[in-house]
Each structure stands twice: as C-alpha cells, then as structure tokens.
Amino acid sequence: MSTASAPSAKGSVDGGLFAGSVFAAVDIGASSGRVILGRLGSREDAGDGGPARATLDVVHRFPNGVVESDGGLRWDFDALFAEVLTGLAAAARIAGERGETISSIGIDTWAVDYGLVNTAGELTAQPYSYRDERSRGAVARVHGKLDPARLYATTGLQFLQFNTLYQLATEPDLGGLQALLIPDLIAFLLTGQRRTEATNASTTGLFDAVAGEWASELFGPLGLPKDLFPPLIQPGETLGTLLPGIAEQTGLPAATKVVAVGSHDTASAVAAVPAEQENFAYISSGTWSLVGLELNSPVLTEASRAANFTNERGVDGTTRYLRNVGGLWLLSECQRTWADGGYRPAIGDLLDAAAALPAGGPRINPDDPAFIAPDNMPDRIRAAARNTGAVLPDEAAAIVRCILDSLAAGYARTIADAERLAGVAVAVVHIVGGGSQNALLCQLTAQATGKPVIAGPVEATALGNVLIQARAAGAVAGGLDALRALVRASHRLDRFEAALV
Image (cartoon, rainbow, N blue to C red):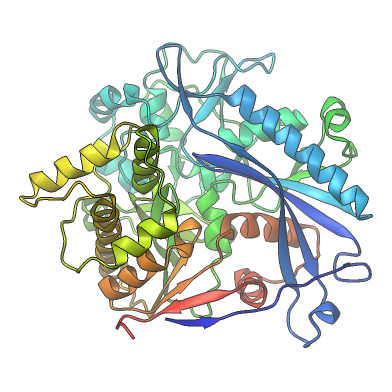
C-alpha cells in the first residue's frame, strides 16, 4: 500500500473564494445521519496556486434505523426530521459564531422509500422501509401488468423487490395523495415546495432512462395517478427558501435557499469520486455497496437486464451504471448481535485478526436477499457458508474475513461484468464512503480485481452535496472534472496495489 495525502485548508476563509459563506449538507443513510458544514478555502489559502480546498465540519450526528410500527418495518420520520432541525440549528449557531453565512442547504438520503402526503401537506403515515417484506408479494402483480423486459427497456432499472414501483403496488388507495421520496419529503417540510429530484427519481422504476423524464406510459397500466409524484428538479436548481416557522426553529434566515443536489446519496458520492481519468470504476461502500461505472448514456440491452445492472441518473446528466452488492450492513449487524450477547471487540482488533487468517476461506453471496432484514447475522452467514459446502468457524474473526472476502469477490465480479456489458476497460477502482477506511477490504478488492484501488474520501457523499451547492452559488466553476480536482486537492487518498508488497 502506498499513501498520498493533501493538506486541508485551515483558519478563516474571509476574503477567500466564499467570502465567509458556507454550505449545509443534510446527509442521511439507512443507519445514521449527519448535518455538515462545508467550506472552501481560496487558492491563496492553499498557498501553492492549486485549486481551492474543501473542508467538512460535522456539526450534528444522529442514529437512524427501522422500527416495527403499524404492522411493518418503518422509518421514524418524525424523529428523523426533528434531528434535521436540531442539526440545522447547530449549523446556524456555529456559522454565526464564526461570522459566516449559510448560503444554502442540500439534502441527500438513501433511495426508493417515500412518504405519502395529502392535499393539506400532511404525512399520512410514517414511511415504510425498503427492508419491510410487503413488496415481495407485489412483484408478480406488477410483472403481470408490465413485462419486465419492457420495464427495463424504458427505465434501465435493476430488479430489486423493494424498488419504489413494487412498494407502491401495495398501497390500498393513492387517490388525492402524492409520493415524496425521503429527501424530497424533508425539503418539502423545510420549504413548502414539492419537487422530485431527478437522480432519486431514477431509482423508482418509473423514470425514463433515455429521456430523463417520468415514464408516464407506465403509470396507467399500474393504476398509478399521473400526478403521484411532483415535477422533477435537477441537481443545482433552487427548490425554495425556508418556511418562516423553520427559520424560527433553526435560527437561519428565511431567505436561506434549499438547493437540489444529487439527492440519492450515491449520486452525490459519485460526483465526488476523485478520479483523474475517464474509465474508472467506483464502489460507494457503506450499508450497501454500489459498484459500477460512470457513463454518458444508459446500457439497455437484454444482456444488461439479465446481469441485473441498473442505469440511474447521475449529476450533470451522466448515467450511473451499477449493481447493488451487499455491504457493510453484514458486518455492522454481526457487531450488533455480538454486542447483544456481551461481546464487544474493537473493530480494529477484529480486522487485524481477520487479516491474519489465511486466504481461501469460505465465501458467501453478500447480496442474497436472506441478509436484507435485521436478525442474527452471524448465524445466517454460517448457514449460507454451509449451503456452499464450506464450514465457517464460530469465531468472530473468521466470520469477518468471510464477509470481506465475499464483498471483494462480489466487487470484482460486478466490475468485470460492467466492463463487458458497457464495452469499457477500467484502469483503476475508487472506493469511497465508510468502506474506504477498511484497509483489509481495500487490499482484498485490489487483489480480487487485479486493479489498483484508490481509497477515499470517507465523506464523499457530503462532499458531492456541498460541491453541487457551491457550484450553484457560483463559488465553483466547471464540470465534474473540476469538482473532482478539488476533492483530490482536499483529501488524503490511499492506494492499494493488486500485488501484496
């Protein structure tokens, strides 16, 4: 492994590129959320004539997770939104203490889930989680109305039983309601404006991958109202300003803008991949792993559908050609199960012990639907290993090594499939997100793919969120190449070679 690092801008930004302005990123994943202040230092602050440098300041962290409520697995959205307001209030206070102005707010979350809002603007119930099983039974009904091949030819969306269109098929009555995806629901409660951000719209199964618009011809056969979703908004466009009551609760000026970013967290993360060349693969590694390529147009072939690749909208009209692979949810659920039993080893100790084990141990399919719901994950992993004819010891280190070996193998298969289907040769793999901190996972991925792996930044999603806001404000110019150059100048990146050194 070799390491390259870049210093971060420090101190005041007065007189710099932002003249004291900062940007607030609301970044929420399936297991935790944060509110972050993003700042850019000027070229003068950098001291080397290079590009401006971005820094992030996490001002509020909070847990997130599904709860059993009203007969299913749901998100406690009321509590989630209260945490968002608490975080924005903390951001306003900290910015004020530094003499800064929060120029805008951007919101990103996980995809596919939604809340139903009535004509009075009231949320009718706490949103279901994609981990709830209710949509499983709707798949056959949807496919009985729309052939899966036709769906893919229009939407280019990977089949997952929890995609939005299958969830919607379980709703008893959608009359008079609108569906707001989770980041759009948060934005609505902040501004009173209803819009659907395009990168997240592309995960619903109701979005035309070529036209970049709602696939209106699909709504009728599925019995969905044509106005079920609000109109689309693109990353970088202003949604609105804060409602008076929100401004009062947070201490932010009512004129504070809410700007659409890549509201699907993976779209923001990919925008901040620090790539220097066109043909790269990315792994956004967190609860899930999103593994794929950035393309200029979708791949809608039957071979692509058979391989279950998805074509989702990226920032600046790009296509995120990827496949969902199981992620660090498997590890975090194992840790939770062990902790419930009184065993709480430090993650660093677990990884060291796993790294010391010999290669060639048992592997499982990390994206098997059997691992979606929360339960005793170590037992399920051992059972999956037995189903392959392998014996996985009960020791935690062996289970951790199995998870990481399996993820790395899954990453390698997915990248190879993407190269073949898109006709692209990849020279380097970028891992961003939480998994970029896991040196063992990064090294195993380099070995499995036979390609160098560049790890970092950890907070790619928040960086992409902030940089799209900054560009919308005129503080950053250029396309994705310019944004990525800024990321490279701002953050430490670690390189892992395919051969052990």
